[in-house]
Length: 540
Image (tube, rainbow, N blue to C red; front, top):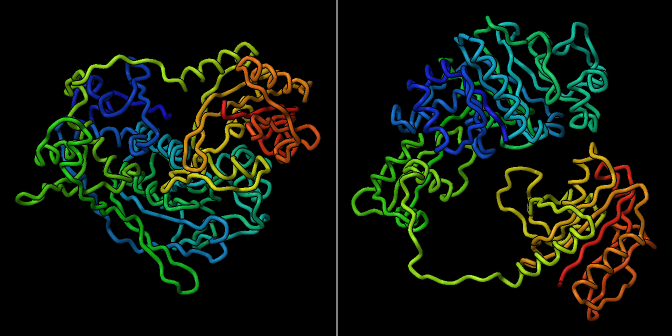
């Protein structure tokens, strides 16, 4: 999760409160204090609130939470004469674009640091390391609009940021530190994204690197901001950046995005709030304490929503959601903010009305027994997420895509479905720990969702230059013996394993698992370079 450095004098200036009050109350909006230093405080914010990845966003939220300035923040967007033309070829490469102009800024060391950190944190949080969203910030006074967003040949040359001489786009991907780091986002295409001005000066090569011409300096006063990506998250990212800069006194101006082939276009940014209507009865039922419509509206206003109770005996509250809130996808998200605005510390704990004596669930006893066996075999337990993606779960495993439970509104390409097996998660963990010494042996006892039902699976993997079929067969034998389960083995056709070095676990005539040596193609798909053995079993 991103850790934001907040300098006291800058923060006190933006909020209008003293540091003691800020430090005391800031954890209650959903943050963890990492450290308190003499001149600054480091705060870790949850990934679902990218609008808090800057001192300006934190100050805006805290002004409401401290009742200094409540209600929906409003930002005026003036119309500019600046446009950017969207080349038709770019639609196959990086098809989403949002832009804005910010005028009359007066940068300080604090505000420049905040802008750069916000840009990088959004690349991580919303952008999935630039794959989904990348942000370019440019000194507008050094270029000549109108702009063009084109697909350029790899041989196209310009001077990239932090270099003094021109480089071709192909060379940037091989020699520039940023190019090497993010080459995988661009090198699969025949042409690369490029934003240029009317004199063919390069602003950026998204999502890789900006041109050195438009570097933002202390004396920069006017900015051109472009956000490119693969989905509509580009519009939210732009809203977060421009509203943060507006908190510093910048004036927001719109940019006309012109689509190819006279296909119309659109104007960004759009800072109109989303309108939702929530039910007081539903909110109170979920929260567990009674609030009137007026009280709910007041607590939402503290959280910087617009909120107006329905008229008469109407049970509803009209809620205006700020354009920079990327996390509001359901009424329950608003109910959570009602509780935060009310104050978690004010919620009175209550004992259940019905007293019962608990005992361990049989499934929990079974899981504990399996953990004890695996730890005895020198495996380390891990707890990966149950959310995954088709690419990881099926494609990297060389398995055909089958039915699964999908997330209706996924917030990232990495979390689109609920897992049906555990092994892909364990292989991902191995891929993230290649800097650790070998051998590595990990396992998980956890739930998968198959056929609309939760099922408990046990899976384990081991990576070692000497890993072989006999070793994993021995581990399977031990687990089944300790559980008192009689089993047989049969031929397996699981493509995740090597033919001739794989087997099914058969219990009572039914398949209850699979084990063997992982296929080299799967090993390479996860970026590994050593033999891997694995098993997964169920119905224990």
